[in-house]
Each structure stands twice: as structure tokens, then as C-alpha cells.
Amino acid sequence: MDHLFLNVLNVVLPVLICAGVGYSLALLKAPFDNKVVGGIVSRVGYPTLIISHLSATKLEISTFLDMMAAAALAIAAFGVLGFATLKILRLPVRAFLTPLMHGNVGNIGLPITLLALGDTGMAYTMAFVVVVLISIFTVGMWIPAGEFSPKKLVTSPIIYSVIIALGLMSTGYSLPQPVLKSFDILGGLSIPLMLLTLGHTLATLRIKGLGVAMLLTALHLVMAVAIASTLVWIFGFAGAERGALILCCLMPSSVATYLFIDQHVPEYGPDVAGFILVSTIATIVTLPLALSYWI
Image (cartoon, rainbow, N blue to C red; front, side, top):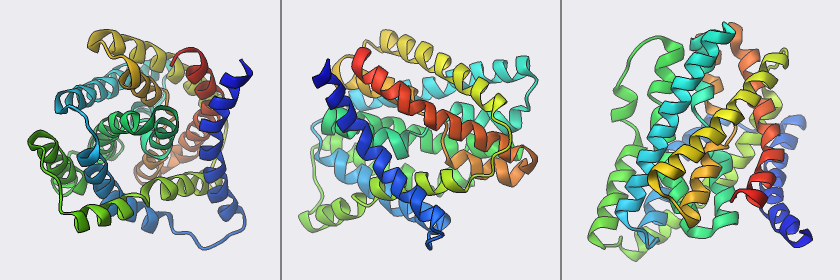
């Protein structure tokens, strides 16, 4: 048991330490522009990480597409259950549905699966990340804004990086070595920058009450366990694929969703910030339990 606990600690602590550095930067009021860093990660880091990692990983394209399908179903399930929950609790759908639907699979999911499940687990998580990112910057924006705009989808570099990566995976071709090495370097920026941004953002969120946040966090965890268990059974996932799906479903609410809420329904910004903070703290408890007894 001590050996198991130490292994789990070795997985979770590096993520917490890196996020803690970002949190400390905010407390020290050190220069750190979340929008600039977020733009670098979404336009450069994520696309190059997807192409470089997937093109070098020996992963069947069919299993990658299965994980993307599972991710889409997971988001849809969170959306349906979240919508019903918000209606029962009489909470505004425009404010809370987007953070209920989208987990923080980029900032926390990628480093956790890399440390816990290795490169293969990280590759599966990337499939989940791709779907979540596409959903966040389309549906996740449309719900709080109350309008439909496909422009973000068409202009997203993530879409084209996935197309390139799938093409390389299906044909067996690889990028020229200088290009691949460049993508490795640029993609390597993503995880540390994401963790620093996570910590910095958590330190600067405007938070009001935590009662609703704690209730939504508990309900979100119940949804996550039910959805992960169902999808593992439907797809018959095993090994690293199963572990990656479970971890992705257990991720806390995405910090990126707060920006849309603060922009379109700012009166609920502090409440959503509280939900994001509480769900992130809850992850510190749930991840070790999941890694020890479920995965």
C-alpha cells in the first residue's frame, strides 16, 4: 500500500507543484499575461504537440478515432445531465452548462496521463483534448453568448493539426526530421505553460459564494463516474485506453470556460469561478483515489 501511495504521489505532486508556481507568480504580481500565453498554447503549442506526438506514437488510427467518439459522447452526456441538473436546481443554463460540460483535460489531463500511463496514455488523452477544445471554442462559446458562430471552428489550428496527424498515422509517413524536431520543441512548451496558466488563473478568479460550487462539484463527480463507467463498457476499453478515458472524465471544470462566462454573463462570473476552484481542489482528492483503486 505504501508503494502504491508513493507512485500516486509521484504522479500528482509534479502537476500540483507546477500549478503552484503559476499561483505564486500571481500572488507576487509578477508579469504574466494569460491571454498571450493562452494564445501561444492554442495556436502553436497544442497543434505542434498533436502532430509531433501522434506522428511518433505507434497507435492505430481506429483506436484514436474510437477515443474521439467516446470524448464526443462524454461531452454530450455531461451536457444532457448538466442541463437537467441546472433546470432542477433552477440555475441559469447559459452560465453553468459550459463549465459542467467541459473538463480541464489539457491543463491537468495531459500531464497526469503522461506521468501515470506513459506516451500511449497521453496519445489517447490527446484524442479527448482535441474534441474538448473543439467543443469549448464552438458550443462552449455559443451557449453563454446565445448565438451560433462557425467561424472559430473553421479558423481553429487544432482542426488542421488533427487532419495532418491523422493523415500521417494512416499513411505511415513522417515529417522531415528538422520539422519534427521543431514541432517537438514547440509542442514541449504546452504542458508547462498550461500548468503555469492554470495556477495563475486560479489565483486571480473573482469568487463569491461556495455553496453552489460545492453542490455542482459533487454532482459533476457523480456524473463523471457514471459516464466513464458507461463508456468503458460500451467501447470495451482496456489498459491505457481505459485509464485515459476515466481520468479525462474525472477532470475538473475547464478554466477556459470562465472567460466566456465573464464576457457574456458577468453577473454569474464569481459563482462559476467558485465552481472551477472547488472542482479543481476536489481533483486533488479524487485523482489519487481513482489511480489507486479504479485505474
